[in-house]
Length: 284
Image (cartoon, rainbow, N blue to C red; front, side, top):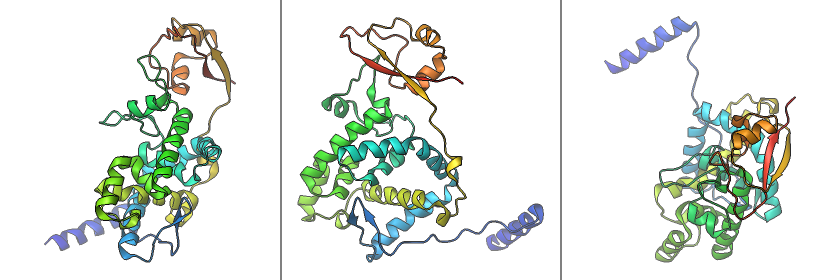
């Protein structure tokens, strides 16, 4: 009965739309693949299956992946440059993509921003986090902090793949599992489901963004979101009213907050006299 119902539905859909429904099909898997210069053992059927899962999810969750492609054009060039300058493999540009979809989200554990930094991690790495300023919301400052964290993990673990796992699971957790299982290879470790998927989610993002056409996305560079032109204004004195300050600069308060997400309140006491760089979009 269920099979007949499905046939009936497909027949009705074909008549209603004048054509057959789109065909979902398997996605291509590479024979060889690397992450951060380290080989992915694609000859292992279990490894291939884990990658296949993530590729299928992101190929057929088309709205989300199209947003990846659009936001990547806006943000990844700057993120890539910071990674290169910090000595971090450029494959880590896909980490904020899978962590936050390149938007300033807050997790249930109160991790914040593109790179999902905890308050303790941010402050340990010299970031300002308080009720008026939270640099975790600054995509590029957060990238620099994430680079310091990843470099420390790599120095401890000797593998960029394991460093990626530690970014998700924590350094202590990964090292504990390595010791218990007497294994130093991410692909041979038995880990929690989220961490087991973590590197494969980045690999799927890498494969799709590097060749979207191969996965059915008709995407052109002109489709990507664009970063507007800015002028940088250095602010040192306290700001009693950011809205009034924005008006004095010829921009709206909305645009000020949208492009300076690290501003968290409508005022900046700045008792320490720190200098802040504020991005002011150039109006045409």
